[in-house]
Every structure is written in C-alpha cells, then in structure tokens.
Image (cartoon, rainbow, N blue to C red):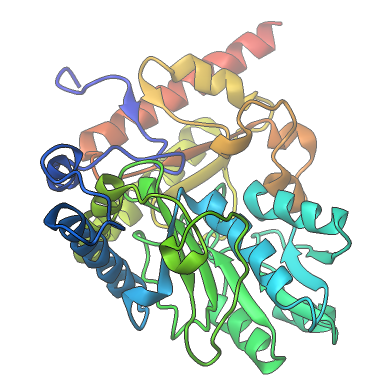
Length: 391
C-alpha cells in the first residue's frame, strides 16, 4: 500500500472529485470565452449561448428527455427540489393543496414540504419498510381529489435503496397527479429515463457525477402532460423565466461534459463498484461484525451503509480519518448530533443509528484502495471494541 495516496476518498455521495476532462472543457469559458449567454448581439454572447445549449442537450440525452428545452439550470439539486415543489404547488393551486412524500427523503424535500405546510398546504409523509422502500399501495391510498404532487427520491443518499420509480410515476399518472423525483444520487450512476419512468419533474446535480459544484438542473416535462411551475425568484427571462439570473457558463459546460462521460462510462464503472461493494460488505461483516443497511439487491452499486453494533460511527470515522475519508450519512446534516432520520425510519433504534457509517465508491478509486479501506475500518472497529471492553 506504499503507493496509495492517503487519505483515500470514499465519500462520493457527499461530492465527487472534478474529472480532469471536465475541467479541460470548462477552462476556456473562464477567460477567452467569457461572454454572457443572454447577450446575443455579439460573438462573445453567442458563443456562450451555444455552449449552454450544447450542455443542455447532453443532459437531455443522459436522462432520456425529449430535448434540452426540458432542462432548467439551477445552482444544484437542493434549489431544483425547492423550485419543483413550491413551483408546482403554486402553479396548480386551483387544482388542490396536497402533496405526498416519504419520511426518508433528503432534507431539501422534507424541509420544503414543511415550508409548504407552514403556508397552508397539506403534506402526507409515508413510511418505508426495513429496506427503505415506500409502498405503492400506500401512495394510492394517500391520494385525494386535492393531491397535486408526489415526490419520492430515485435513490436514497444514505442507504442507496433504489425506488420503483416507474411504478410510482404510473400511479401518479393514473390519478392525474404530477410526479417529482430527487435523482441527485442516481443520475450519472444508474440508468434514468424520464419517459420510461413516468417522471414529470426531476432534480439532479453536477457535483455528484464528477462535475463542478454550484450547478444543477431541473427536468420539467413539456408534453403529456405539459408541466407548469411558477418561479420562486424574479428578475430576468433566463431559463424560460423559471430561474432568472446570469448563467454560470463554465459550470454548465462542465456539467454537460460530466453527463457525457457518465453516460459512456457508467456500465463499466458499475461493474467495478458492484464487485467492490460486495467485497467490502462481506469482509467487514466477517471481520468486524458489520450489518448492511438498505436493500441488499436493489441499491446503488457504489453505496455501502453499515452498522457496527455497540461502536460509535463517528469514532470509527475519526479513527480512520488519516487513511480513509468516509462519513456517517448525509453531508447536508453531518453537523448535527441527531441520529439519521433515514436509519430511524427503517426501524433502527437511536444507538444503532449512531453506530453506522456510509462508504461511497467512485470513479477514481482502485482495487488497492478497497483492500486498504477494509483493513483500516476492520482494524479500527477491533481496536474500539477492545477499548470498550476494557472500559
């Protein structure tokens, strides 16, 4: 392991390293191609606009959208979630005031849902089973004649469970209800097709797929049905008036390149990730008493959520921090001391939830790093158990 750079990065769910090929494509748009994409009266603005539209088409191809016209650029998936939920509930206020989501959603959805409740909307929060799946029958039962929107994430950011999005979208459409999905952890990692999966609104982000931070997108279906959302900001005509402001051209260009690379390399990457995640789960179960969280089969291939009963997860993370970068769960709630709301929703008690870690594999990991991570984590757990016994 002498040639392994430490600490090894295995927190790809929080963010990803920028692919050098993405950076190379972005670089000209910081300097010589610096134009404003809305300034179409001269070549500088025209070149920027062409680059933005090319990126839009790359994203459309990645997710199976009909055209780039269905892509609205934002600052990231959190903004996209906010825009989708508040924008749809506002736009269809004459139809109803009720939305449906589930208890394991990302805080960007849950906190937005609570905001909607604070202004008079009604929200149903559905439970999940021990693997993190929400029942389609529960969704059907929750729909009322006032339901406007269903929002269920494609893949969970903590445990990697992949939802039956196609069936959920089908239920929504059968009842003339819109379907939104937070796909930040899915797009660029597993195949996502908005047409086949009955998706009307979808949030996703660049920095989860080896693209730059600070840029994301919201897919908005343009046909069958044509989805309307109202903007949450005002001040310009950019992004069809739905997200005004000067476009971040370099980041958008990088987002497009990241999408193109992901679409091409996803199949081979997933074969590696599936192999490595199985090796890690099996080895840490045998050597350190780990228990795997989430769906054992229908999960993101690069996600590993493990519980080590009786050992504090933060203690494990701190013990290996100079050798491997891993996390306790969502990066958006990592500063809190509360147990993961996702793990609690699976039926886990607070102590076991605090005894969990998340490993996120990615493009630049290697076989040698996987072996090093297994040794580091299993060694740390054994040391912590020994200390716990002595205490």
